[in-house]
Image (cartoon, helix red, strand yellow):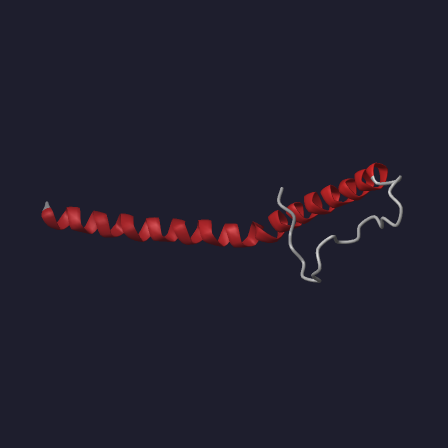
Length: 80
């Protein structure tokens, strides 16, 4: 019985490892879709922010909509 128990644990570990690899490969395959959805959401939010900024700052002279108020050219992703 000890040998059967050891064999069944080894068999289950192999099956579990195979299932983990399958899950990992599925996540890798879906990652571009998830990234595309995030990018779409970010672009929509940035577009809405620019429209709102244009409305709010329309009376401020020399204000350029969409111009960065920070002195850097580095892209910083917005916090959602």
